[in-house]
Image (cartoon, rainbow, N blue to C red):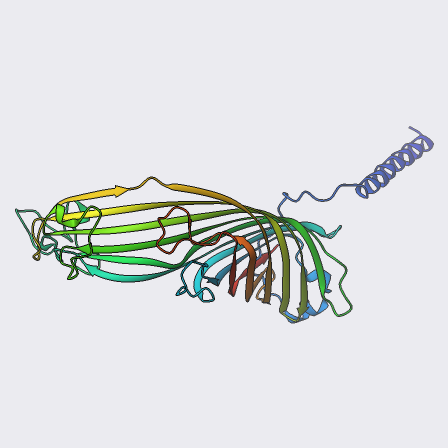
Length: 399
């Protein structure tokens, strides 16, 4: 091969390679955004970060990008239901605990993404009176009998005849609910990230849907026995029909469920300063609430062979009425306010604390049905409010 032909071949190969490289660069300019499910295998969550690193980062670069998640432990106080009883303190708040989870994804190029948030909280406040039962103590729980070992090496059969765990006596805990409910909320929002303000604050508007369920319990218990001084307190039927050693526990229970679907509009404002992050959220929601209530009465009658210590249980009679159902529909409006301060511990981990206030201003049914006649307090209004407010503390992870 001559030198001229060799040179021509080399030039042709170089031109082809150059064309391929140019086409590759041009194609990369039009590639779609990165696949959000293509996780980066970099799991150096505890890699240290220094103040100089944070000082060099602009606010937009410090904000969450890609996948991020948070967990917060909630200590929220809940308002009491509005019942047809003037002695019920409607303005009193009772302590409760819960959890809050958030998972989000923010596209760094177009500054938009999605945010999923879940809140579970509840309050359980009872008025409790301990009442010793007719036979007071089951002696089989403390000694060996007929060659069979009792507790802790054996078992009382049936288990209902055993002593109350932790007390070594037979005791009923007669409870009336003061404020008992559970709150579960799920929300999905589309978010946008605005350009940072002059002093570094970042605004993120959001719009989405929110579904939450509120389940409220109203329960009243009454205990009477043949040992009561006031024998005029009779059962239905009277206890005297069952003998001279008998007791009865009656439970009137009413449960109301609120299933609510709302539209939601809000924003999040974030400000960075050194290792600290200050943020606030506001979300307003409005929608429809499908309400359902059911009420039952349960009776437990225990018949003994005597009234002394160690008397045996002859029989236990259980009775329960069929549930009585009611339904209703209401319009709900409310808002959710959050404020937090976080501290950057490592490159990807931040600890934070703050507060949260959730106010459902109207359209919530609590206190059970007023038409069933089961609730001694007459039930509650189906157009009430519910307030949750308290402290939060948790952790944030950003890839």
